[in-house]
Length: 258
Image (tube, rainbow, N blue to C red; front, side, top):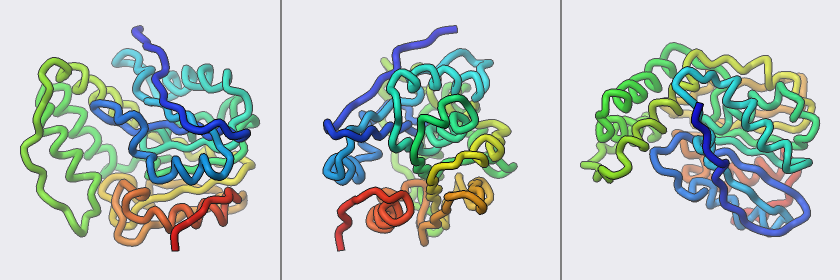
């Protein structure tokens, strides 16, 4: 099995630690998907580590459980994690980790468009993108991904996508294996017993992670937030609403624009 070092970017030097797990991307964006929350968290006293979740990809037969266990070993070295954030696949990994020995070392959790359960619709849409990438049709896979992350009520057609041929095989592998890790996903039991505060955010008009795919324990300090008319990118669709709810439910003193 081939593995690589856990790639990350860091911001801030506060006393509290926020760890962020990225979604599936053909090329990692250096943590820019989380940009709306970086400055507010740094100002609130956090140091932030954003990981490229796919930097620890294994072989084609690796399960999400095996993949998450390798991330458990990686994150265990960081000590207490005051806030653990996951987006999409990154959020699935976070929920898997809540069922491991890492859980007592995690204070609060923020899930952004993160599936706990894959129904037939989610499996089918992720599988289609994984299959296109496996077959080498990277442009079509990326066009489909671009459409599916948009809200169902306002889909704009994708234009031609320029492919860097030098990295095309690596991009296709990241998409194929990343989406395959979510096949037949069911993490509801893993996250159910987490005793800390947990906030799960998803788009009301998401074409991928919908309400049926999100799980919270109503008897614990768990909360779900549906973004009106939102898709898969809540930090772009409604950043102020997300940060207000993070402040109110997770108790993090974020400054939120009026």
